[in-house]
Image 1 (tube, one colour):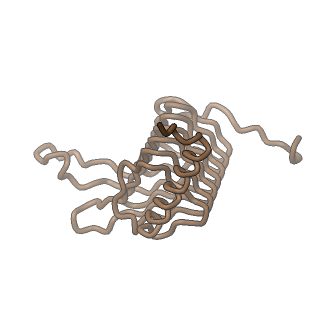
Image 2 (cartoon, rainbow, N blue to C red; image 1 turned 60 degrees about the horizontal axis):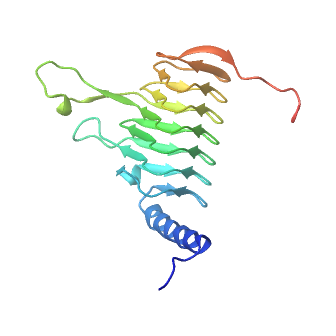
Image 3 (cartoon, rainbow, N blue to C red; image 1 turned 90 degrees about the vertical axis):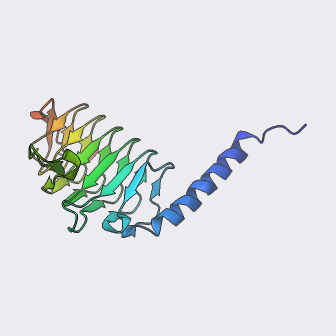
Length: 197
């Protein structure tokens, strides 16, 4: 009887499989920076040639990355995720115009970012209505807590922090701490005068 291989061997095999999967996946994107990784499985990927992933980006499993069209004949939106972003599981982003996520952004699990919503014409099926879109921007070093929802037309400033379960419907300035539904500024990130202080 052959026993199961020791854990280090199994982990080494898993890492090789993930690396091979990411090399294959990277070829479909508009850009996929060195040392970036998206854990398997990826729940949705649409129009990957409209999606750019920076360097050293880490994204946990079950992400949904969707560049979509506002109308059937329109060009799909663009998604850009900057260098050193760290994204937890079940992340969902959809762009009919553009979603730009800056450098070193930290995104908690179950975060959803949408730069669009559906029209509301009463006699038209919701799924066939044109999308109303406006760009979304997440500044460098921002932190979005678990279950945050970011809606169209929003800018989240550099170094801003958005608390868990917040729904962001309007822009948040640099260095602000925001929370609630809808999200409101409740404080500011502490600024240190000297490094390490």
